[in-house]
Image (cartoon, rainbow, N blue to C red):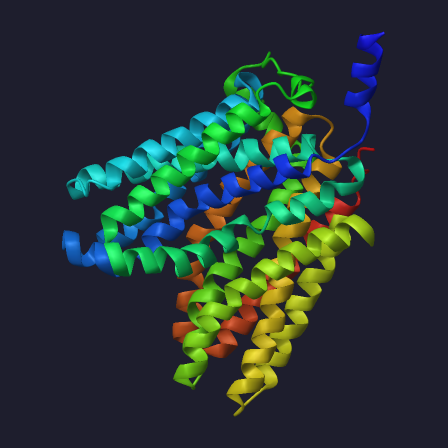
Length: 402
């Protein structure tokens, strides 16, 4: 009875760890689309002479696609197929990096950056949906915690290996290396997953309503919306904290150290949240604990005066709690979603809200700090934590899907 044994092997709740790690590497490759321009910002300024504003716009242009098309990406992925979307997005990203490696005119470079946004969006919608499908129920929060570290890891790798490539071989080699890397992982995933029996079971959802009706349904679905709202207030805050808090430290050597250490602490918090959500408590409670931790840390921060070292320690604790928010938000989606299509919609909405937060947060925090200094930062972080706590409590009232 070969069919029976085949069916039983499919239904066994086993986590395919190698495939999960490969999908995580795909996320790192996609996040490097941000990181490669961040690490090479000064070199791009020198080469193109386009000015800091235009070059900065080229850096953030990758986020435009997620800002506009985040929700629809989840809908499209559920119809076309997650693996097709993932592999197509990775190959598109690789091709665009190869174009960038020729150092084309600035206008063309800017267009490639906008198109890279679709590549990045395809990966962040499809990859976590596939990871959740390849994870046993007892490991889903843990694998989502691993997935949530991809952005910080990408920046750390680019800050180390990317900077070395840039310093020794220049811009062209940096972009060429990224192109080869992202295309390679795309090809590997295609051959590794195309005949995977678990992924054959992913249903392709037919969209019966109109496109806009379907989008409204997604926004009104608390299982997709609430994890994204929890995530929104994190992205508002973390980018701003990593950018502006080092400037509030009086010691220049500590400033440089914090620029390196804080992203790593944030990444550790994300993985820690996944582990806690897996073994100790529901992801909604982890998010609640994280926001309370951020609020307590920033209150302590406002009471410290004179000691730069102590200030750095408290900031580190605050960033650790902040880093726990995305780990818990990502773990919420497979916990609450009723099917893979709903998961993809949740990840699409998460990408959209994340881009909104990253767009709105930094100028808001910059204004508050410029006008009121540390007090402005503290008050704004406390306001953010109030909203984070509210949405975490609301999400906690939804019954999880077993």
